[in-house]
Length: 195
Image (tube, rainbow, N blue to C red; front, side, top):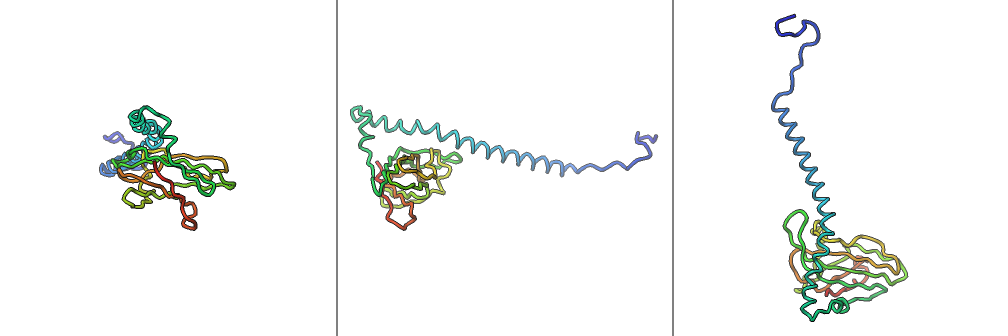
C-alpha cells in the first residue's frame, strides 16, 4: 500500500465542496426554515389571537355601562337596528385592536345581520363601506386582513338565520355608519347606523 493508506486501485478520491458552497447551502437552508417558522407563527397567532381579544373588547363598554347607573341590558336594547328589504342589521363600535404582524391600530365594529327575507342572502366583508364622523367613506378591507379580530365571514345566510362578526378599519376613528351593498351598486346600499 502506498504511504497515504489508499489502495493503488479504484477511482481517484473525489474532491469535496468548497467551504463557501457549504456555508451558502447552510445559510440558505436556515433562512428557509426561519421563513417557514415565521409564517407558521403568524398563522397560529391570527387563529389564536382572534379568540383572545374578543372577551377583552366588551370590557370597555362594561365600564361605561356601570357609569350609566349599572344598567347592563339597556345599551343592547338601544342599539340601532336597520330593517330593510327583509334584512335586519345592527352595528356597534367596540374600540380598537392591533395587528398580528406589526403595530397598526384598527377601529373595530361588531356587526350582526339577520335574513328575514324568503331568499338566501350573500354576506361578505367586501360588501361593507365605513362612513366616518367627518363624512369620509372607507373601503379598506385589503388593508385590514391582519387585524386581530373575529372577522365577518363570507357566507350565504339562509332565510331566518343570522351571522355576526367583526369588521375593522385602519386607525383610531369614529365610525357613524356602515353601508352594506351586496348588489355592488345595482341597488341602494343598506345603511346601518353604528352605535
